[in-house]
Image 1 (cartoon, rainbow, N blue to C red):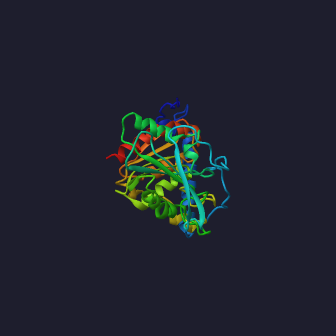
Image 2 (image 1 turned 90 degrees about the horizontal axis):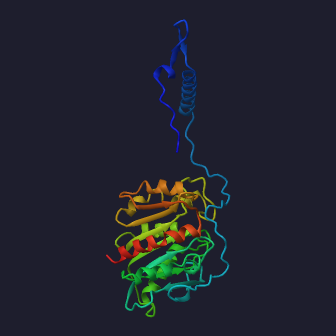
Image 3 (image 1 turned 90 degrees about the vertical axis):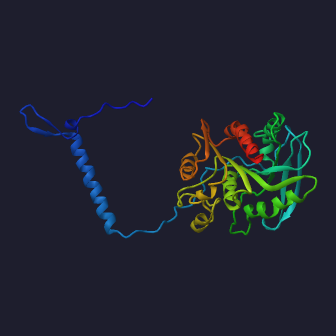
Length: 320
């Protein structure tokens, strides 16, 4: 508990009589005067110095969004089986792009889908691996009698879900190639007329960016964990943006009005390195988003702990 100092009287703050009845200037008054003079000096300097444009700091990669590299897709052992495949993606420079879909067991017919956007150094199967097992959480939700939906993810590497200088664009791949593929493949039997979006870390940023692009009612709901966002245009790593102009074109700061009609749930641990930026961004949302926080960091342990809440949020809004 924070200790609150006792209130200080005006006499203590400004002056006190000495033993001879003369006014004696208090120490706090001297400090206040000094601070006031310093402030005036700064103001005078700022008035005489012309404003300068924002300059980037040295864009050194920080470990904010770095996770252990998953060199190959992790094994999937729990929940419903995965349907997997790949396609040649023009939006990703012509490379083969892997994808994975999980449909709940015991359900037939056409299902709505939540598109999962993965974190940095992970891939299309990471959300289904033993550390997160979102498909198991989804199956438990459906088994409890709730409306079913499917999960679908595609591998974008380290692209950060927007167009980069190498010509690749993970966001465009999801919108222009992956979603049409999901809707057209008869063995998947999915509807993409209204979708949910989910992502964590880099994928949390990606889910928010794509939601802002698609808007409501196409996006039924968005749930994100620890979205990788930088409010300071001088303080982002080059893996996220290719420079100041790229940051300004693709930053989510200023895009909050686009979420006015999209149900949004944000979860982030109180010790997560993106906590301050995320709270700052969320403060600009009208109406406010659902915001969940608890002890935890930028870790699978925290992300797994909030998945039941996020799955319920996505499923409930997809069923409307």
